[in-house]
Length: 135
Image 1 (spheres, helix red, strand yellow):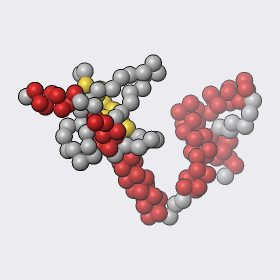
Image 2 (cartoon, rainbow, N blue to C red):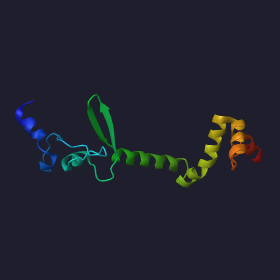
Image 3 (cartoon, rainbow, N blue to C red):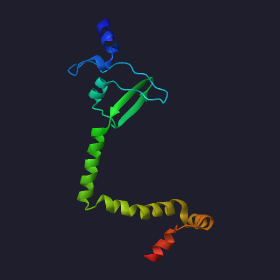
Image 4 (cartoon, rainbow, N blue to C red):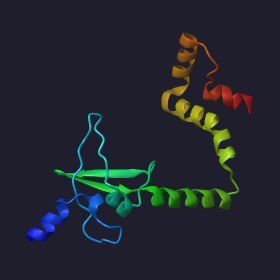
């Protein structure tokens, strides 16, 4: 790497113009809470704004930052389309969560465990057998 490239990389990213397509390199300091401040130019390169989701991967002694906003928006759109194709709504899914959770717990732990839990702690937990008998 030639000295001018090293000098360019060591210059703060905020010093570069918005038109500069040079490397997105610079330096940041980790604060006492473990946070790293990303310079404006790097945020622009990543398309990151306050509240943006950024995934990270530690590779040996390097840190790879991966913007997630566009990816999450794409996944959200695909989920919405899949629900619409299936004739489902978000509310219908939310309404089904308690029953689905109870079924998973009953399958994972069994009716005997749930009866013992009910005996020890009270509450409204039902065994799968009791729910099946009601239907």
